[in-house]
Length: 373
Image (cartoon, rainbow, N blue to C red; front, side):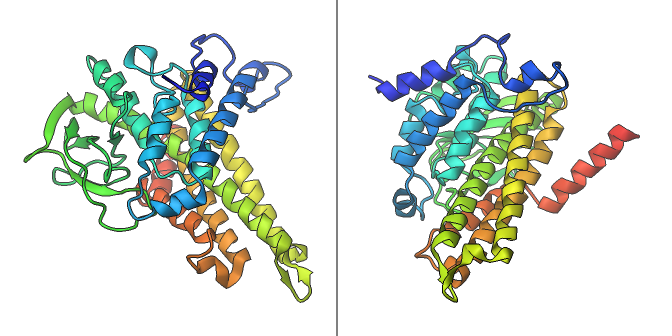
């Protein structure tokens, strides 16, 4: 039997009226030129629900307890039961039929609380399986519970999906292997080390105990993977926004109480300016990510390129916010006893999961020039 909170969550996110406004931007863009990216009341309820769930189920103590493995089975079970993983998956494929914007609200809460569960990776894999003709049942199975099925956000190398986030706990990995999009199901692999406590691990895509299923080939496979990687980047951008927001809050709280030279360090202009700059960057990243999610849900063909920009900016912002948090803490920020270092390790690890940051910006620039030319 599902809990009352589970049922409340599903009522909030399970609506399927695609003609209803999905955020205020949809209502206001054509009225007096106003642009308002505030979520609707239903979306605010969704965000509040997941904030409560993650605050309760992913405390700093829980994160530290599973830091080495990077995976909290109890938290994963809660995310499955509340419908977070399938929030953007169509109902025929086992999801709740909401949108990527709603997934982003859940992911932002996950980032804020450093959730040790592959929410975005599993959601992206389920969405991709649902998009493959005849694989809807596999998508529903992936959402039914048990160990996760995750997406590798980068193409495989030599038949191996390298450092897959969540791969240390997953029973299956969806990856682009050469010209094939495959689902490789097999036993979890031990993480090689603490890489931002993301449960990263290499996963072979065939041979031995691995059951390999080819989902698509050639251009179709590449197009599907491009969509899946876009969902991952957009969802991860929301995670990074939540992380940046929380790191900033931790820094502000510390600046309000820490004293030097007989006064609180929050009264120093250098500290104030640093935190104000980060606050503006976090707000900008949140708006960019939410607009991109809205564009996706409204069927805008340019959402994929926008997702690259949103991810790159959110990743830089999260690293910047976490670095500012360490800076405000001084030498304490680098000690394991303080939580500040947790945010920087997670932010940097998640940023690098998207690929070389400089290469991402170079790709964005090249795509912009092509469109302009």
